[in-house]
Image (tube, rainbow, N blue to C red; front, side, top):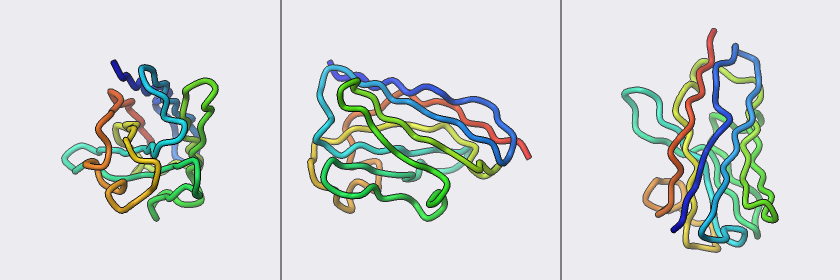
Length: 126
């Protein structure tokens, strides 16, 4: 059974930092596309970043230069370092795993990922 568990969310002031983690089990995602999405209240889930083992990560424009994705395949864990957080970053953050080794446009939407973590709340106060 594939399981992804996101953690590390919390309450932080604007300009602060948080590091999210996504541990996974039941499947090795080291060679597959993984991503982070977020969903703010009343809004649709939106793409944040995707990572592959072959190409550079792709970030949403809204987080580019502030967020950094990485993963430790030996520990089956993916990370999202979030710096210079803004109130508009407030959302539930979800990690996701795909069945593809190659990044494509489908990975910029939820439909590109069959595996999801439960989400972790990030709240940024002004």
